[in-house]
Image (cartoon, rainbow, N blue to C red; front, side, top):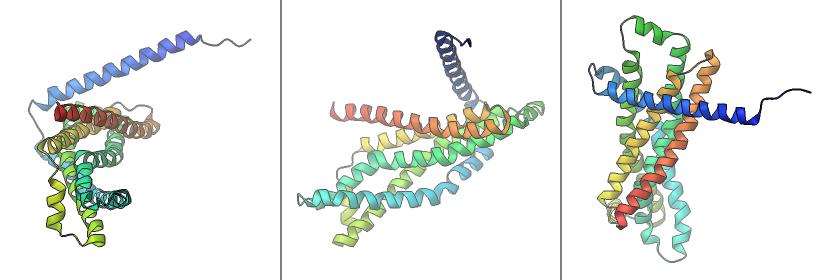
Length: 264
């Protein structure tokens, strides 16, 4: 008869590994905040990462945002038409995009594009011992590689979120104009008549939290990659999956807090 490990032992081992990973992630985040506020700040590298994350993501953000605005408008029109309320379409689209879609779509795109790129890049540097070589050269690899990328994500993704919202509204206007020939002034006046400061503020806060999450998850997975090239692919994959999961959790949490502030 073949002996097998007791299920209780396997469960305990898995639980211990989970809490160990959580503790490592906690130490990683704490170290980031310690390094972020002490010189040197590597401003040139931060600007370079902002370019890599922001400018190179503009084409994809532009296309996705524009299509999102068109599709959401076309899907919403039939329901409003049944009640003769198509004039409410700009307000409905503006609320949806400003409150949720702009920041969320941007975060999901960046989680797939930026998160995987950071995880693969740092993972490759880790398994090829380039990070250890930087330590020998008296360079702090954590500050130069991790801090700069997380700060760049935290700065750039909110800007991309606002840009995505604007492009989505332009796509929505294009759809409305082709059906009703509404002027752009009338569209934006009706759209923003229902938008409050809290809506814009909560959207920006969400984007900042999303940017930090995507950056720190990508860096953590890449910086701790093991097992050679297999570990690089695994780090990139885990960075995307975990970042998207946390983005949805943060979206729900921040929306609940914003609704509580709005109604109470």
